[in-house]
Structure formats: structure tokens, C-alpha cells
Length: 168
Length: 426
Image 1 (tube, helix red, strand yellow):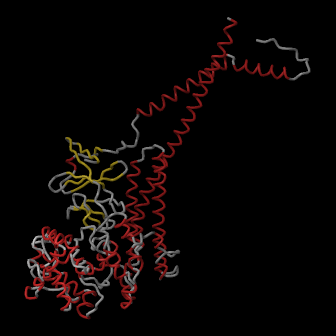
Image 2 (image 1 turned 180 degrees about the vertical axis):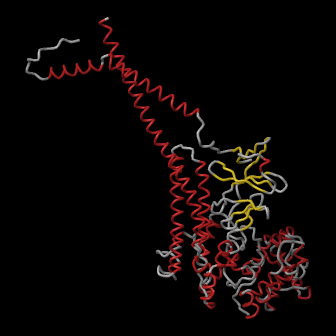
Image 3 (image 1 turned 90 degrees about the horizontal axis):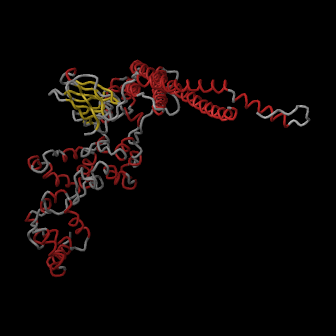
């Protein structure tokens, strides 16, 4: 520590330097440093533990899907000549079990104005009620305003699970 | 054709092998025993040589038919005797005879089945019922269309061929050859701006930009061989081929009866005929640009129904777009909102259904769809709001973490300096 000069001198510069020094001394006192370190270390631990614990708890929202989705129902839940709408990411899909028992899946967004289509067992068509658009069981637009076929998905049945995926 | 002209052609045909030996030899080698083409190709008159030049790409040629299939005569005879009427030679048919000329084969179901079983064989009968056919066959009109006006003789291609004059993408231009020519159409006193207006339509956009060849072009509404303007009981029968929901709702509404009474065309009254643009909500109601306002005002019940339907549609449209917007922002911020976006598809379905339901001109029908959609949109909006709140919470958490880390670094630096200052004393 430097020895303090007498305050009787008229110059104010040495007085300012002295006050700065005192402030630095205070900052470097053990009490403040220890408080700062312990508090911030505690905060850091919390900043690591909280997100980690939140990560370990499953979120309320379901899994996001882009390439494939496991459907929330079993093959036996769908009777022949009927269909179920399912969620494929943020888009609707339709799983159809044909009268012959075969599973087929398509995008359920009509290619006209994106209404959700449904299955008509009486005529064996995929049908859009909004503007009476019809698609056959290969997804082809066969009647009404839809300008293009429905996107076709691949269906794989593994035991009691149905997995629907994009592309071949 | 005068005798002197026939004589000159005959002399030319006989002398051609000597004057143009290489050309004729090449052609005769290429098309065996087709003396018609061999001779016509080297004739100086384009009217006679062009058909021979174009014919190899004609669908009839590709199916094995030669000139004599239509024109008769004897293709194996290299001389003028090939065109002897005694050998069944038929020259270019008169305008009024063209349909029957083509119909010799095209009206014969048994014959046509051998080449194209799915092709209809009633074209001539349909043509006779059309405005074109009646003008040509009954009035002797020298300008109205015959078969070859749309299917150019000697270069006929099937509709599936992109180069065909009757390919869906080319039909508007084919019809406009006459119907877009103000001078040609002057005697008929009808508009000639149909092509320009059609090219503004959503149908042409779907076809030319969207590549949807099933989108309607001229013949889908007017008929092709039986073309009439359009000559049907009600225009909804045409539009309803594709837009059946709206046509059915309209047919049951009081507007159908009123329009019929006033002699107003159904669908075309509000949507126009050739320039049918993409409909928007602005068509509905009593504000600027609304078609209802052409007949209705705020004081009459029809105007009040129009305004009520517009308010309902606007409320759902706004709720849907707000929910979609907040969910999109949350998704872009990295939040998982696919379930909410999935649910929101139901609101879109309700909105599209409500827009279709206005053709019943019944507020209740629209209201049912709108209320269903509003409920879905509200749920999705709430999920979006919760996701946005979570984004904000994470941002604040990040800021706090950064502050803690900065404080820790500062504390460590101060601790280091303190230790350094203490060492000399110890």
C-alpha cells in the first residue's frame, strides 16, 4: 500500500488519485470477491441444472415428424373400407384400409384449396367435401376442381404398429 | 381446275422424273408406291406441294393411311390417270361437304374401332347441331368453321400432341384464329376479345402456369364439335361440371329463380364468363368491388344478408390468419407447434366451406361453418400464444445466464488480482 500524502496541499489531483485507490482497495477486499464468486457460481449451476432437468422431462407437445410417423392406432383399429386422419408433422394425412384390407396413405390436404379430405366407403373414393373433389385410391384427382393428385406416402406395418413415411 | 392446268400438271408429273431425277428417286424409295407425294413434292405451286410435305407427320399417315384413303385415285399410277374420277379420285371437298368427307370414316364406329376404340363417332352429328355446322351446311356460309379449320388438313395431330392445334394449351389460339380477328368476325357482330379476357382467367393460369391440362379451355364450356354459344339450359350446367357444390347450392337458392326471371346468366353474372378471375372475399357484401352491390343496397334484405355473410367470412378469415401468423412466428423461433398447425387445417377447411356456402345466400349456412372454424382458430391461437410466451421466457433465461457468466468472469478476475496483491505481504 502506498503511503497517503497530507491533505493540506492545494492541488486536487492527488486527492482524486487517493479516492480511486481506496475504491480499488474496496473492490479487491476478500468479502466482495468471495460474495461475487459464490453468487455467480451458484447462478451458473442453476443455469445448467434447470435446462437439463427440463430437457429430461418429456414436453407436452408430441414428437415432430418430417420423414416418417408412427401412427397412434394399430392396424386392427381400422376396419376394411374405412379410413383415419392422422398427423404428419403439421399436415394432415389419411390412412385408408381398402375393402381388400390393403393399407394406403396419402396427404389429406386437398390439392385445390387444402381442405381436409375424407374417405367415402360407399363409392370407394377419397372425397373433398368443400368443392366435391374426388380422388381414386391411388390418390389421382378424377373429378371436380382438384388440379393435382394427392401426395402418396409409404405404409409399413410392423406387428401392431403402422409407420407412414414420405417417398419410396 | 381448268383443263389446261390439269394438262400442265400431268405433263409435269410425267417429265418430273427426268427433270428432277434425284428428288423423285429419293421420294419413291422413301415412300414406296406413293406417287401422289412423289409428284406433289416437286410441284412449284405451294398449294399442291405443302400438303405432301406436311403429311408424313399427320396422324393418318402415322397410322398407315396414304393420300388415297381420303382422296381416292390410284397411288401406284405415276401419271395423271392416278387422279381419274373413274378410279374414285375426289379432289378438295367443297366447304359444305368437308364434314361428310371426314365422316366417311369418323362416323363409322366399326371402322374407327380398329384404330381408336375410345374415339367418339358422333362428331359430324354434333357439328351439324353447332352454330358452325348450321351456318356452313344450311346457309352455305363461306367463313364459318369446318373440320379443317381446327384440325388443319394434312397436318392433323392428336390432342395429346403438344404441337397439335387442339392440344388444350393451343385450343384458345386455334379458336382465336377466327374469333380474335375483328375483321373476319365483322359480319357476325360478336365480340372478338374472348382470348384476351380468357388469358386473364384463373382457368388459363391453372393451365398455362400450373400445367393442369384438365383446366377448362374454350371447348370445355362451349363444346367442341357441337360448339354453341353455349346453347344450354343454364350456364350452371357448364360451370357445375367442376364446381358442382356451388352450382347445386345456387340452383336451390332464390337467386336462381330471380336470375332466370330477369334473363341474367347464373354464375357469369358475378364471375364473368371468359375473364373468370380468382374470387376474393371482396366480391361479397356492399363495399367497393362487391358484386352484390350491383343490385342490392344496405336498405334491402338481400343487402343485409350480403353484409352479414361478409362479416362472418371476414371474422373467420382474420382469426385464421392471426392464428397462422402467431404459430408461424413461434415455429420460426424454434418452438414445436406442429400439433397446433395441424389443428388449424380444420379452420382452413371451415373457411373454404363457408366461402362455398355463400352460394346458398343463407346466413345460417355460412354461420355454421364460421363458428366451427372460429373455435378451432381460437384454440390454435391460444397454443401459439403459449408458445410465444415460452419463447420470451427462454430469451429472459438466456439474458440472465449471460449476466451470471459475466459476473463469474468478473469475480474470477478480481480474485486473481487480489491473490497477486496478497503474495508480497506473505
